[in-house]
Image (cartoon, rainbow, N blue to C red; front, side, top):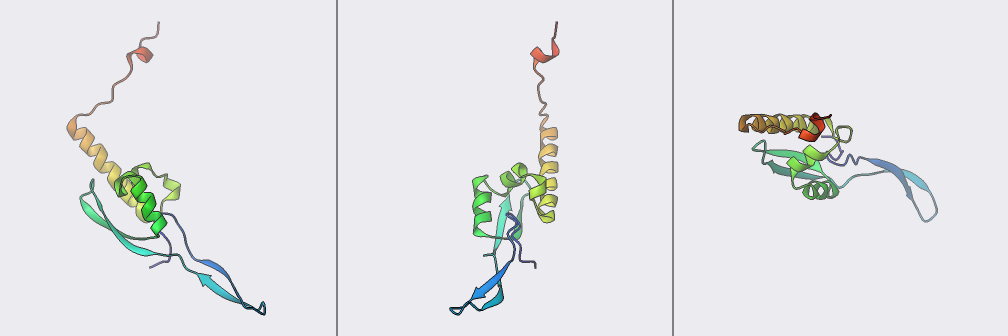
Length: 113
């Protein structure tokens, strides 16, 4: 698997080890990736992904994986999470249609004299 956070997009960084004598050798800084599995209430299944602790805090801030996906902007999501977001939106829209939820239109805007 790649070494990229699915939520924040944090990835490998490159730099140098610097010795006391100021000799420089190449090195790689790895992100603190953790295997995470969160339950999606809307989809009714467990979603597994790799994330940094900062990414998990971000998800918790939005009230879970469903809230995060519904509020996140598309250009900031990984392709894996974009697919999940589309699935969540389809499920939410389908549930609203089956419940008969109709958005009301303000009468002030439609009645212009």
